[in-house]
Amino acid sequence: MQQITLMETYLIETLRNEGISDEDILDKVKNKEADQFEHLHKSFDFTNLYSLADNLETILNEGYQVKFLTHPGLVNLLRMKYGKEAGKDFEKKETSIEQLKLSEEEQEDLQQWLSSNWDIKEGTTGINIVPRYT
Image (cartoon, rainbow, N blue to C red; front, side, top):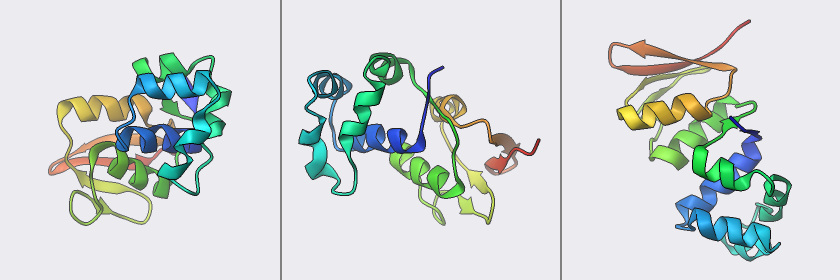
């Protein structure tokens, strides 16, 4: 599984949320035209996707794992990827996520991209995502 940074994840998921197809993402990156996405998020530099160019097709088609995921990053990705909001779809604790309800497909996807500094635990009212301590 290809590992990517949290910022690279944000870039990809922002484009997908804006309705940009994986094919269009690949095309713009391949042709060094990712700056054309700048209007979608003024704070993001989509040309940073150029560093993924050699592996981007695999990343988009087969998925990725985030190298290191912060708690705020986890909350943001749950919103971006699944439309889940803190206080509505899960409880956001100081260092964990609790009572998250995901479909089986979403849970399989989560297990793929979730960085190794987090563990998924089955709870009685959903799943909990807790820090992994070594």
